[in-house]
Image (tube, rainbow, N blue to C red; front, side, top):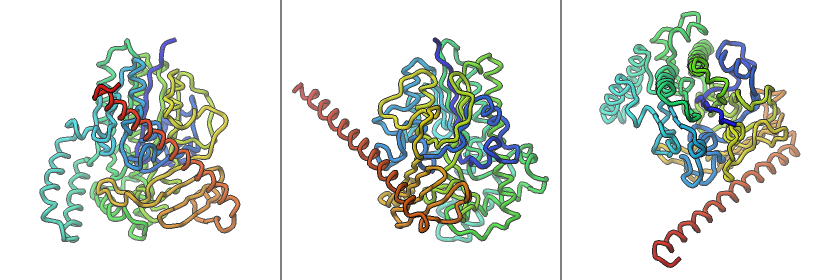
Length: 469
């Protein structure tokens, strides 16, 4: 039996509640909705950690968000999913739309025979490089003056918006690169193609045709820059108040337009496969790495400071060979995605991978763990306590070990997570706490086992080097 091709699409910052087949009433995801109709849509899929530097340890590494170590990057002691497909004879390619946490520096090129991150390989647009160079040269002159920093930041954003540009690679450019690769490869081997789209990630600078689907035409390029600037000032805060309801509505228009832009790009890839008579032989997976806050709980961030559903719950769809035609309403985790993909492709799952197939009937509660407020760019707060969540429908418990808080929500009755029930439901709190304890114990046990295996391998290698064995 021949192996299926695999198209693995990940989308940055896409909220489940802004997706059509999950109940959203705006036309953001017609392509994804059609895939859901002919495959398996997981309606309660949750990230095991946010943001990208935690979620992708699961999506491309098959491990928990804090698996192997607290740090970020693809663990070098495990097997990347691209390595598994490559070793099984697949031709592998990865295209990351400029997310700085998914570069070669963090190991995310492992297993890919072709890899582009549009950062380290010269993929940035010329205009973007020019603005980046100017910004870096200007930074020393601006430091110490909030007024100058604010004005310079606003001017730069206006320039980007007027040129329909942004610091991240757009869906059209990334899709063009992926389609060029598809057209140039030979068809003797099956392929594993990973594409990561960034358009729903802040900042939102959508194309006019995408924005026109959601706006009445009242959003100018200057408005795009102004809203970008306002969101930037609120991006790392828990306090709201600076964005009016009217401005928030325009921000949602921009966000939805970027989701539709991404959906259109996915449609282009599927159409290209169809034109090559390859779509029926291709296993397709589309999943979000995390969501993003739209002032739901006070800000616009998705950093590891909150685990409400707007940042934790994501769309997840499988379609193609070996995929059942039915929805999955049980809790699903991002750790389940590599296991499901490999199983559907008929490949053995590495023993270190956690999770289980999304097609299995029996499920476990979804657990997320991050280091609270960890900031890897500056390496701040590495030793903070954990921020954890457990979803066992309809209950969700959020525990902040750093701040010593617990919050309990009934997601059916309170989907916006506004009413903490922890004081009214002590037995439920204790039950979910026990699930979190068991999960933490499993992660620590695996980490200790991996460290011991690594120590033994290092000792054996050293003894061989010395000629003692």
